[in-house]
Image 1 (cartoon, rainbow, N blue to C red):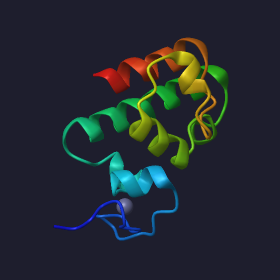
Image 2 (image 1 turned 135 degrees about the vertical axis):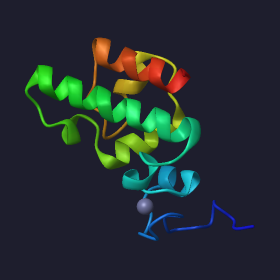
Image 3 (image 1 turned 60 degrees about the horizontal axis):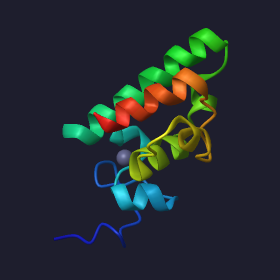
Length: 106
Ligand SMILES: [Zn+2]
């Protein structure tokens, strides 16, 4: 069995994983949204929240939650809106951050 902690490339597409969160998950930000099970479901929910927030705030969803930010959210699973907002690469606040907390709990 492969040691995911020491793996520096995505298990799906073999792209290099730059951040610690991606290495722990073993997937890049593209593939994590296609992953089966809870991980993929949470990833897709966060991408959808970022898209909704971007639509309402007239901002670019990929700036509200960057690829690295998405992986960090999935890996650390912050349990409050304030902790979501504090994640590097995540610019969601208020109800959007709360929605992320709920998506990560699901
Ligand atoms: Zn990948």
